[in-house]
Length: 454
Image (cartoon, rainbow, N blue to C red; front, side, top):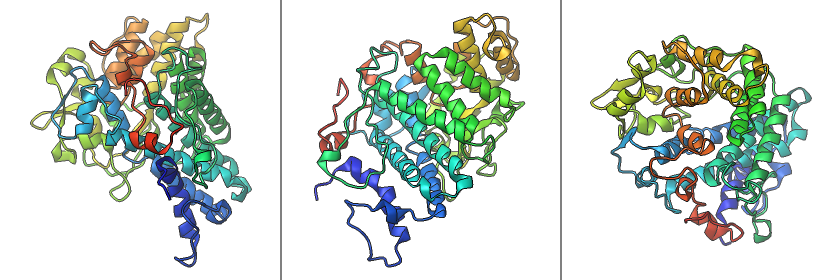
């Protein structure tokens, strides 16, 4: 059978479920057809599959950290001094990604595997106990919606770059992959279509998820991701409203000290903070922190080859900004955000919601601010935690605060694109700032069209 990689990788999770349910190790179906009715038979089977979807979402090649590091490197203009030997990140830092870049290929693979795992769960909801059905569906749709969002903003043009109705995003696959053949190969959907699907999934997830769900996705996790999605689209009213739902829930609170929002060096793995709206859970057995891999010094489990420029720190943070202390000297300077190699990977924290609401209210200037707090009040919440006073809350002030607050967390590339801010001498909408469709996918699926410039 000719190998068709996109479907080969998408079918992997379904095959694993089928194998695990077989009483006889030899009693398996051919790998190009998966009987969904045999794969997930009980509510417990579906719940286990859901955990598998979370695990794939948190893989180091997806929400485990690496895609955010690659995006940071594409946006880097001197903050990071890259000394590593990984050619994949050297390409990102020099804005010269190749369509054979293994890191980029793995982002695509992990993202679509997480999506297929979620699709398996959604397709088997009839097996789930009635009392659990909404929660399980909501979690699966959160995983699928979040995955599509990050895939489309990495592999497609920015929503505000030309027409999202004609620009190509990524293929939308909403059912489990059970048959591998040329007739079922997907084409790339438009950027607009992918965002529409993301919003539909996350909106449904918010409606069906509980307010409290341990460290798994909650209704406020979905709302927070919606706030991020709407902000990227420039739908500021919807973004502010979603962020406000999270803030006003009272489920989360800022840590008193900025650095306490992140796993401390040597702290127990697998612990969220009060500020975490969503974080990928890591342990010494099940996780890998892709941020620490490069941003952490060798003393604390990292490779120590993504050094933070001391000049950048001094020129970016004022002397009395507590966030200036969120770096450590281990021969070179490193960010303390990822000094725990088995610390959870924070995906969304409360500070982002305050700054989204502040930015949207600043842009819209409504008669009554959304959420009842002015941009100055919201901005002051974040700056006072850093030990700073706040005199003005212009749009420039708020955008600068995002740079200070979210440095090295994977925000810089996407913020540059949505605000149309050039990256050094490179235009914000340069083709080099969009991931190439992996060549192995192009070779396997002739329905795919490569991004411009590759």
